[in-house]
Image: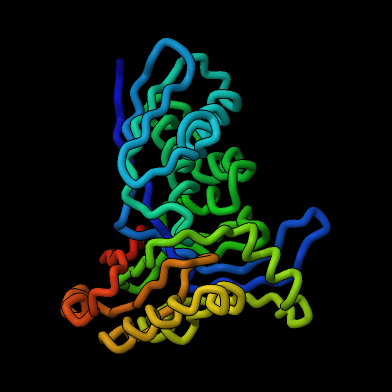
Length: 285
């Protein structure tokens, strides 16, 4: 038996713009996505055949078995490669579930990246993204493991070679938000204001990041969950240069130019029963 342990990073959306609803029911998006040092951890071990999955940590019952994206990712890469070996997946969850942080999609990409190495398949990041795009909109992004400009339904990924150093505080209120519900509400109420596509933004300095922070989906999720606005306010009062909801929510993040300022701000956050995390941007070039 051979084993490998890989990390599955959370992400935040520094930018999320909903351009239009497609004929297939999905949405064309433009996003700037940033992977974080807050990670799930996955150990992959070769077995004779089949897929075995165990989940430990912040998980719910729906995360067991073939419904789990990690299991489905293993099945997808086995099918694509024709590999007849089996794998045992031990998943340790640290990323909150249904929180706008992409944990399930990241787990899927991490399984593919890990099996690519374990089985010496030789797939490029682009090839892994092609295999993974049918699993979920965020999976292709996580195949690159660096900040990226993401378009379409998440299938067009343009990774950044350089990105400013960023430190984050993430606040999760402890409840979940359904991504399909958020997009359904967007379609029902907000489609009259569809923005035009923009060119890929560049981020040379910290202020470029702060000036670009935007998430269209706040217009749906915040009215349904006003506590999100309260969390954003708490982050700004604690010294964040900017604060935004990630993805469809409910997690909110505050952006800081360095670890020292971020760590000092942690002490200023009131205990509201929220889950608070600190993380750095993963900016590999």
